[in-house]
Length: 383
Image 1 (cartoon, rainbow, N blue to C red):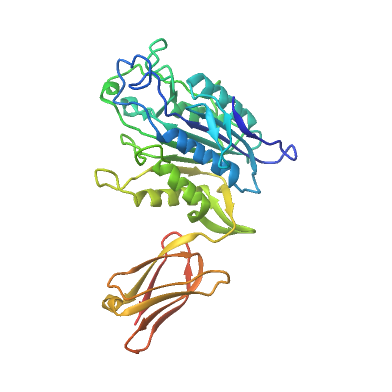
Image 2: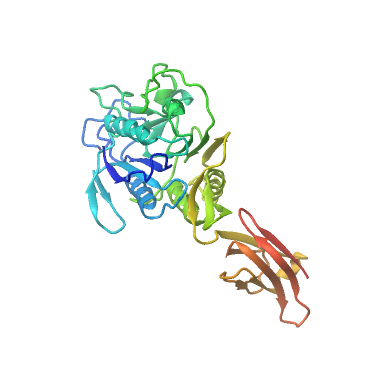
């Protein structure tokens, strides 16, 4: 068990956020792992991104997470390489993400969830498979150990999620930064039996929950990262959304990222990426809520929003100098020279006047008191 953050509750009934973060890059029993490779490696080998991605998310939780309703209570981290590098350059030892270590950590994590409004955050980055195109499996570092069977050390996410229905926490977030390919060798398997991290000891009745699952890939598809030891696409967009662009709700003291806004904003950011085959990088978000939406993080400044500014008629764009003038105190405006295309401009959310000016001296076109707010604000200036 590797707790890199462990903070006691200030009162017995205080709600907290508890995170379990797993990053698996080294697989000893896959090609390149140093041991005799598994008979069926499912076209998988070693990964560079997951340890870097997991540490990036852990550092965000420690350095940036801000939720007065459920402040950070714990971060438990398991990462290949056995060391956690903090943003200040210091390092500390952590457990390797072998299956039994992951299961021990998951049980402890669930045990720390004591209040209904505790926020449970589960993050796993590494290899994943969908045997039989049904089960979502996440692969621990000792996956395919011949001494234990090919699937003995695969994590059954579906049954882990089912078991977590019995958790005291009614607010749960799962981030699955892993592929969901259906490997040819697994399609005909009828006895694939990965194991859950949390045991379902008895049938659990459904209860009110706010449940968010962010999967980096659609069923049957691949998750992505840039080459080398870089933070994955999903984790990069997740942190960007948490830091800024998913803060869609105004609250006392700032702007709130919620389970609902995080789902929509991460999906939007991922769609802006292009896979090697030219397709958008769709992720697979699922949000089920039959109680109030969960606040996850409070930012101090308004979210940065990409606004689209056009002219009517649009033929005037090539003659118009466009200006965005903030009316909300503390915000910064922007401008663009004449260009025959709509203006995509990043602005902090707030109230703006938009103006189209012409060098010929003809009257300007103005749209006043335009509310710029996520997710996709637009303004058309009539000239």
